[in-house]
Image (tube, rainbow, N blue to C red; front, side, top):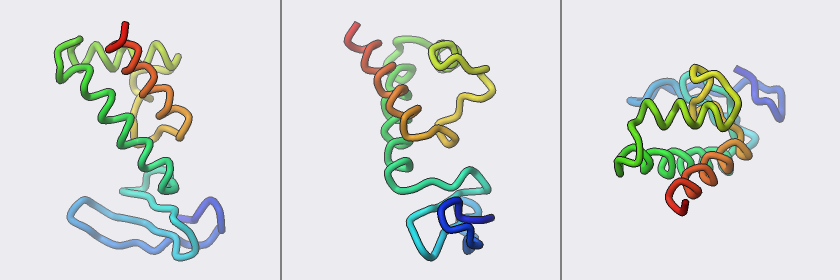
Length: 104
């Protein structure tokens, strides 16, 4: 796997969570072959997941329905709605989506 910034090979390490690829020149990391991301995007993904999971964990709607509604909001097929593949901006959209459900 290549770092998208430096175009150099990322170093692979086996961990208990799967294979981790990391660039030795920057903070780009990939888990299990997913798109490499920087720290800002990884943190946004964690925040988005936390905000989204609260929707179904608090019973506002089922998990399956929450994903279907989010897919509609993002104008994507349900099969393409995965936090691990979202950009920073997409994560911000997920957080706003969750906030609107709780505030509305």
